[in-house]
Length: 505
Image (cartoon, rainbow, N blue to C red; front, top):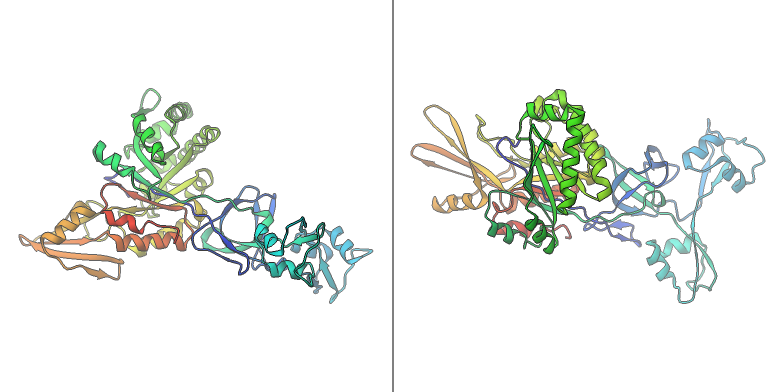
């Protein structure tokens, strides 16, 4: 929970490149597509006869993690089993009864156990033109030349102009909710490349610092705190720096303006719980974002009264509807799941995930400012579990992992046992380590470097955020096909941190 902080985000979606010959996906890309058909079937393996896992609705999107030929490059033969009917067989393979009858020259719908049925497949047809080679065609359609040869019964690599070639409909392996995986026909799930966003919140710095931050090549989105919820007028206080927006655009960065609610549950409930107030707020935000040529908005509403859970979803839905015609991105911050009714239970992550373009999980404040117990701001096991829980409700490619560019120095009074803490930037921690000549120790429980020292009889402890901890979190993003990363806040990191922010390796 960010009880003492604003938000910062860095995000990016990779695009997956395919190697047709091997059927394996490269690690430096991610294709996200929208299902074209109304009912696209997801199978347990790349075979139409395998177990049906799920039926996707039109427009649903999931990350693609690999591509293979499966049974698409060879005839599919179904052996009739007890209990099979022609309808059941047709439904299993996504074919029509009439198509199966025609393919097998059946005069009726009667079938018998042990009967072999050829299952018709739909193929894209390529007509050979002058200059075509098997290699060129396989490269064009991202299929293996060997699969073209097998499917079309080619006995030579020589092709004739006008020759018709069937193109196999490969399978995409997609990552579903809750980490489940399944296979879907490539034609039903066209690829759509999206770059990962690396975003940083603008906070507590000088104009000179902000200008320097815009020059960071690995940063492609910045988020200044420009809007604050209020209880009068249009229910928002705006302070958009148009010169900053222009400067960011010149550097090729997007600007996602942040709106906060002051962590005030009463104010938030008063505005979001009233339809007319919500409409005024949405209209004011939309008008301002369009006029300032902003690219997106980051909604950072925290400490919401549980009774306003549905109101918050309504607000995001209405804001999305207003912004969609203008192509403005909407992202919503959520805490890692916990038992606190205001800081966690008031967020309907599943519904928010359906509406927003991105859901940012704030992966910090495991031990918050004011915690009676010293500990890591964000241990790796803690945020791994939080990510897993969020993936139950939100597609992986929509999830942004927010990471801390800060930590806390914990001070324990040995006489009373009382614990206090001080927020520290990465740079400040390095100064402390150097000044006290501390030796870093790797803490296996948190996957972080740890230091401690005694001063004036008090015990000081720091679980460090550094290049090592950042790399492990970025690995978590890659391993789970997440949309990207975010960080609170740019300017508090050490320069070497950016060296690990590479998603093309």
